[in-house]
Each structure stands twice: as C-alpha cells, then as structure tokens.
Length: 414
Image (cartoon, rainbow, N blue to C red):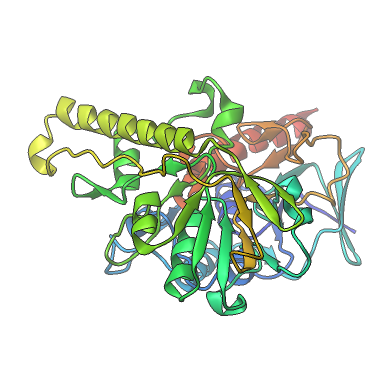
C-alpha cells in the first residue's frame, strides 16, 4: 500500500494536462493507466478517423503542434504520437497496465485498488474519459440476431461489415463520417437522423472551429449558459477532417446516394419505425447554423476585419423529402448490418461512491465533484464549450488543479 498526495486515473490528454499543473504546484502524484498512454486513441478509434479541430489547435499546456501542416487534421496515429510526445515532454509519472478495479472512501481520502496494488490518497482526479462504453437506444436490443450491429468503439473499417446495405443510426460527427466512408466502400447506406449540429468546414476562408475560438464562442463558460444540462448533451458537429477541408452534411450525403430517414424510434420484428420529425430536426439545425454564422459576421464587422476575410455566405437549407418513409423493412431492403453511431458513456463501475447522476456521470461543477477531494476531467463542457476538444483540456485542468492544490493545503493545515 502506497500513500501519495494525488492520484490521476487515465493517461489521455486530460490526465496528462492535470499532471503538468500538479507538477507546477509541486504536488506529488501518479497517473494510473489501464493500458498505455493514449490507450483509447490506440485501441478504440476507427482507422480513418481524424480530429475535428485543425492542427494549429492541437495544443496542451506548454506544448503544441510543430508540424508543417497547421491547417490539416491529425489522424489517429498522429494524435497518439502527439499525446505520447507530450507525456515524455512533461515526464509524466504514468504507471501503465494499472487498471483500477475499485475506488472507496477512507478516513484518509480514497483507497484505489489496481490488481494487487493499493494506493491511499486525499485527492483523486478521474480523467478516464467520457467515451468508455457504447450508448444504445433502448430498442437496439430488438435488432434481429441475424443482422449484426456495430458500435464505433468496435468498428474499424467497412471491411468488417457484411456486403450489402447498411443502416447507420445517428448523424453527429461520427454518424455522418461513417455513413460517408461506408457508402464510398460500395455498400448502400440509409442514415437515421435525430437532433444534429450542422456546420460548414470552412467559412469566410477560415476553419469554422478556428473562427468559433477566435470569436470567443468556444470560450463560453459553463456558468454563462442558461441550460447547462442541455448544452452538455448537444451532439458533436457534422464535421470531418480532410486535406481538402471538405464540408459534410445531409445534403452532401444525399448527393452521394445516401438515403436520409428520421430518428429511429423502435424495432418490431424486422420493421424499423422512424419518427416523423426529420424536417423539424433539419430546420432547427439550419436555423442554429445561420445564427452562428451571423454572430461570426457581426464580430468580424465590429472588429473592422472584413477585408481580411472572404465575403459572408449562406448555405442552402437541408433538403428533406416532403413525406419521408416512416418504416423500413430490414429484410425487403436487404439491410445486412447496423452501425449504432448513437453516442458513448463513461464507465465508472469501479467508483464506489454515491456521486453519479441518473445517466451514470459524476456530478460536478466545473470539474469539482460532489465529494471532497474528488475531481473529474475529460467531460463535455466541463468548464467551457471547448472542453470537448484536446486544446480545451488546458483551461479545464488548470482550474481543477488550482482547486485541488488549495484543498490539499487546507487539509494539511487542518
């Protein structure tokens, strides 16, 4: 049994960012990692995945992208290399192959067990990520056994799928990217669409996420939001990273031949039932996109920077059938597989503390959990909108570690 000031669970970019700030404050700590540095990136991402953010936004505390393609998008392999280089750069105290099996409260703080080892600490940072388990709609279990289902955590490339038509469920970043990739492999695709966020990849000559950061949208704080619960559940934007900086949306997928359907509501035998709200979902996504573009235009104008950007533009509304089909016969349509791009959930089965909400997430305010000495990193909109992205970890980790350091000093005085 070892005693240490702080334990971080998870050696991804968030856990490493926390390590950087704890080192700056002189807090003795270790990082427990179930596999190796950047484990999830190495083992739980599909082959062609790229970051949604441009390379110049790939940065962590004291460290940033140094390559010759700032407007490109890191591949999975490049992202792994970036995180590994960062771990070496800060000499992170990572203990690999230390899968946590239980965390319990003790009079001294927390008891953390990994295999045959136990660690006692007054402070704990849970940075194990928000995408550890697949999230499925309740009706997913009704999918006939003869039709295999795949989640992005296990999907790697189209060759995994049987030949034949594929139903992709979910139209956030993951869903539209996989629908595009699978269709390009020669497998016809039907895409089931619910609430989504539509954005152009490039607007007024600049990457949209660069614009959102520059204008200040990505820096919007959690305590400036009217409905934080909803803000933390908004889907990831329909974007993908390509060398051509190509936009992807329902119109571009339709032009390719992807069939668009509404939100999947139920499965009865071999019949899929869709919601009739497709048009409403698309109109709302178009409305929010145009509202965002207007905000960007207004900021550029107020700064007197119009000459530095290309002219404002607006994009055609999402094309939707007047009466899209509300049912799908899986047998008649020859659906050979289903890809459930329906989201992810954290995995805290080892956390034996009463701190989880009804969706299994740690209750917290800006990363400060509802338990003394417990902190969380790596969650959507932790302190700011940019928390979702790698570069958002810096501000999140800084604020969490400032509170953690003050907590430990207060404990030592007491």
